[in-house]
Image 1 (spheres, one colour):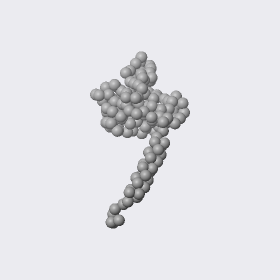
Image 2: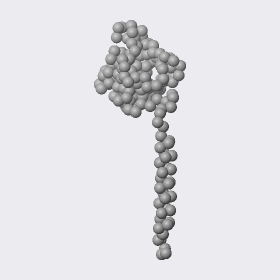
Image 3: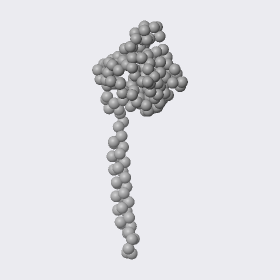
Image 4: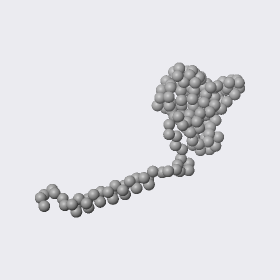
Length: 173
């Protein structure tokens, strides 16, 4: 048989070997795809799947919130999203925990300190991030398009306004 030529027997063997390998790969690959989400795992496939609800009374009127994972009232990790209407403002406040804040959409002005001091102001857009240690006073103002923020921490979550008269629970929202 000339060099480079294969017999029908070799061709049939090669085809059988290739077919077997492809079948085994397909079965192994399909077996690796989970059919159910394991306990404790949270998967949200896109922003359309986020379940928004009115925010608790400690937030300004019109603010919405979505708990992505965890329970903010109990010890343990949590992640939530806050939807702030255009121009809304959360006056200076503190939290009883380290807060990690990421801007998902829109933009905000973020202030650090007991007062609205423009020297401590930062403009943040999508992807902007802030880490605030426990009890660091800060304030947030949403831009003209509003903003969606993602907040992560370890609960329980609490928010205390620097000036009690700024707390929407004391002003009737």
